Amino acid sequence: MRKKDINRKERETGRKKKVTNRKMRGTAILTFAALYLLSMGLMTWLVQESYAAEFQSDAAAVAEQIKQNAESGIISLQEMGMAEDEERVTDSLYAAIGRGLAGWNSRYHLLSAGIYDSEGRLAAKSCSLLVAAIYGENGNEYERTFNLDEYMAEDDLNTLAEYWTAPDSGIGMNFYLTRNGEDLRLIAVMKNYESLTEPGEYATKTEWYWQNPDIQTGDTSDRIAVNHWRTALFLPGAAQRQEDPGTDLWRQWKEKQEKDPFPEKIRSGYQENGDFAVYAEEQKLAETGAQRMIWIPHPENESGNAVGDGDLAEKELSEFGTYYTLFVRSNAHPWLAAMDYLKYVYLGSLLFAAACAVILIIAMERTYRQRAQMEERRRDFTNAMAHEMKTPLSVIRGFAENLLDNPDTEKRDYYLQQMISQTEEMDGLVKEMIRISRLDSEKLVIKKEQVSLRKILEDETSGLAEQAEHIRVLCSYESDIFLEGDRELLTLAFRNLLSNAAVYNRPDGEIRICLTGEKCVIENTGDNISPEDLPHVCEMFYTGNRSRSREKYSEEKKTAGERHFGLGLYLAERILQLHGMKLQIENIADGVRVTVRRGL
Image (cartoon, rainbow, N blue to C red; front, top):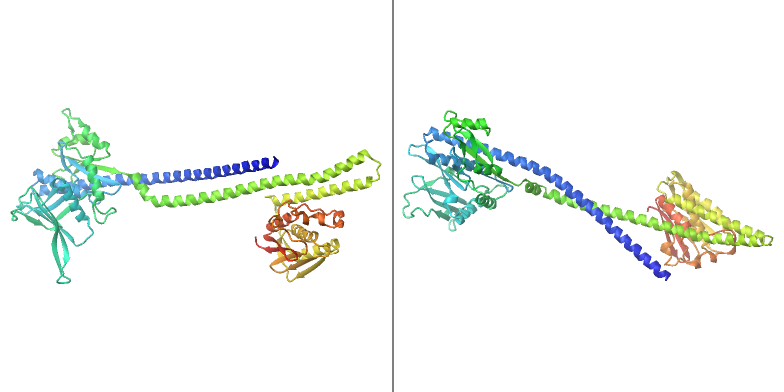
């Protein structure tokens, strides 16, 4: 029943340790996970703040660029006397938006723009645009724009975008307008092919073309080709050499425009009482984050006159006949941009945090195991002390009771002598415990002095020869080993080793000592240690197989008060470890060998 209880307690203890280890690991993992998420979240927030400021600055720069382009275009029309031509002004505004947005769209920041005239009508907006420079009847060059979203079917426009973003340098595009330049007639994609019959010669072949379905195809005389250096194709977000090549970003931009288009009219302007009113449509644009800019293409000022959003400035608009309102809408994702920018930081930090967590868990488990071992050692120490103290105390009590019952007994002196012997034995045990306590203390400070190992062995073997008269001690000192350490502790360690070699020896046996520059070997001719006991001989209070115990010693050793508690080898190993040395015990043919060498 007792064994079952012990096994049950051991199982419960094992389960408690496993639960504690799981809790410890879980706590460490959760702590590092929380620190990782907190640090990465803070870093992401800081980076997204930078991206948000950058995106806002980009939108302002685009608005300023579009305004300058539009002002320059209107001024050019004024110089050519075409400022009153509403269609030419619209073309100029479309071209200003196309050029202003070129190259600004990115994966996490889509920009679009719309320009409204002084009556609140949508004059121009961002779109898939073709700009062609043509000559008028009077020889003046002006720009015509064509909204390809309105001209071409979606499949045709997608095909055109694929060719335009293709990295193949052998592809070119030709654009054909009607002869009067007022309409788009044909787009042809041309590709150069190397001649099969004449190597090194190239021929041009039409790869793909689109033709305006609203124009009759029979008469080819009513068309003019526009040279490629006088045309510009603007597909917002689509490019060959940008961060996001291909048409994916352009398709994303188109979907955003179709989902949230610019209103055809915004009802804003001056009321009869002179107050400037902003109505729902314009307010909705402002709520989407669109930047608003008003400017006046003043005829007498070539650079135009930019007007802010203040009430006073807006009231001044009534003094002019025409003004324009520009909205630049920004669809920004600074958080996604920050996360994409930090993706390798996330990965590296995750690996670093995982490595730190693993190292910490290993260190914590090692500390936990050490503490558990220390606690187990303390329990064993207490149990062993109680067991070792119990025998002499029982003897003392028995002799004391005999003396109390028979104070005049003839064995009085024997009883007293045995009682004194038992108290001396207990005193020796207590001294050993004090030494162990000192060695296991974290505050232990080892003296640093030059110690000759040969001198220690010579002193100890001389005393050993007097105690073990029938044992031969053979010494061979090839060279000495000098140590920096505590002479008293090292003397105690080798005294215990030599004492064990003498105690566990035959009455007519030998002790062989060999000292070289690298190691010290001590051999005796006693019985071998059993394989089961050999791994445990240096454990505290371990006495092992009773066949090698003190019952086998001679009566002289018993009467001399020699008693081994299983502490000698433990003390020797602990002292040697503190001095950076290793103790090894093994069986040999005629006894046991102890080897002490440098290095743990």
